[in-house]
Image 1 (cartoon, rainbow, N blue to C red):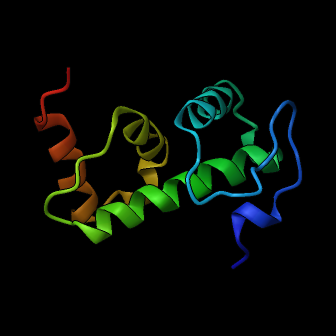
Image 2 (image 1 turned 120 degrees about the vertical axis):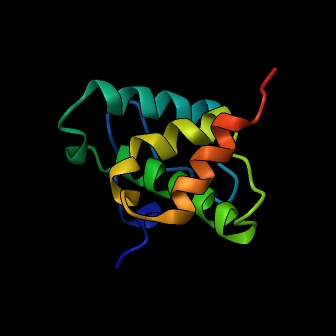
Length: 105
């Protein structure tokens, strides 16, 4: 499987950052909004690459602290966009439950 951060080229207005180790949440939110508005999002490789990278980072955090990690609002939005991938995953169910059961300011 190729690395989504390096296999993507470009999309209207978006490019995959050179350093994807700590993606800017506001940029990810903007890309996510674009993806929600474009049902043909798979034809925009940079959009897919950015969202796939963000999802991989979020899932790594969940796996690192499977009983305690609570996603931020931005993280949950990305995770929710890909919820179909985690349909029968108990760890994902618990991560969603922790998100909804945690008070936010």
